[in-house]
Length: 196
Image 1: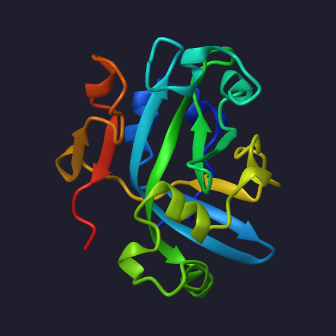
Image 2: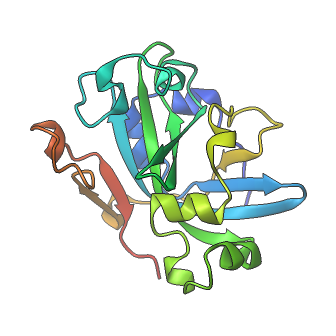
């Protein structure tokens, strides 16, 4: 089996929905010195363009969303509900605001660190949500704007396993109660069905 390779900028330059689906089975890794913490990406959501009423860019270019208009492959990390960090990866052409939210991973590296950070939660609950995985991987505003394609970056996405369409659940994005249609029901959430 070939060694994992860091995903290139070209990978993230593609259509956001394609990237969100394609990221299933790749590996999200946080480097902390010589320690690797991370696992397989098993759930994502796509957000694309100012027209997408669920996307932060719906209000246009702001200090918060500036990185979404930049080069693909950068981290868009934002704070929500006054206590949670969320990791997104910028996609598509520079100047077009779009990103993929990493909603869940299946951890397979750095278990001791993750367990400590997740306050003795059972392993099945360590990284099964976007805020949980940021806590587990120690991702916060310090990583906002980080270039995941830079060989020196402390966050990267690596090649992983091929995931057939038969193993993927496609649905509407989560928590969009006040978002109007058709954006509320866009089938832009992708999830690996069998995590056993």
